[in-house]
Amino acid sequence: MPTHNPRITITLTPELSVILSELSDLTGDSKSSIVADLLGQSAPVFERIIRALKAAKLLQIEAEGGIAEIGRGLKRAQERIETQLGLVLDDFDEGCRPILEQAEKVVRRGARGMGAARPRGSRSVTTPVPVTRGLGPLQGGGQGEEKPGRRKVKGG
Image (cartoon, rainbow, N blue to C red):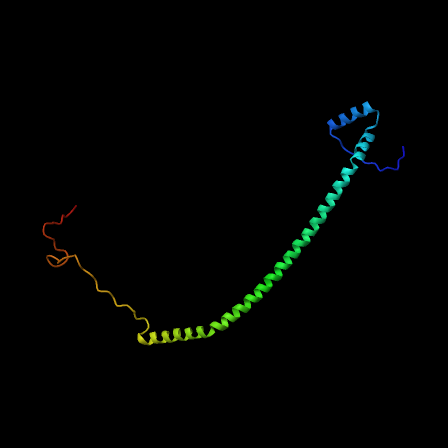
């Protein structure tokens, strides 16, 4: 039978198909007319859902644009800060230049004076004197001699 209304095909679960068949048998209406009536009664709900989804999508687009704008603003702020920091560092370098030049002169003068005072490769510290405290005097003279009270055992 020709109709001017659009048609759709839907897939139902077996349980829902049984319910819809039973409802169709009891009311005498076709399954498709029952579904169409249910959807027709739900049209205001669908319209509110559509409005809410459109608003959410618009907010999402605006938020993405806002995020991009925030990113651009942060980049501009960073560039300004880097420029100002560069100027501050230049001023600091300029202000410290006389102090640094004087310090370099002192270091160079000290290095020349140290080189003239002692020859290259010489030690700046004298060799310490060995300490033999607590050993006491050696008895009997040199090495290899036995100490009193001890004997060397040969062969084992």
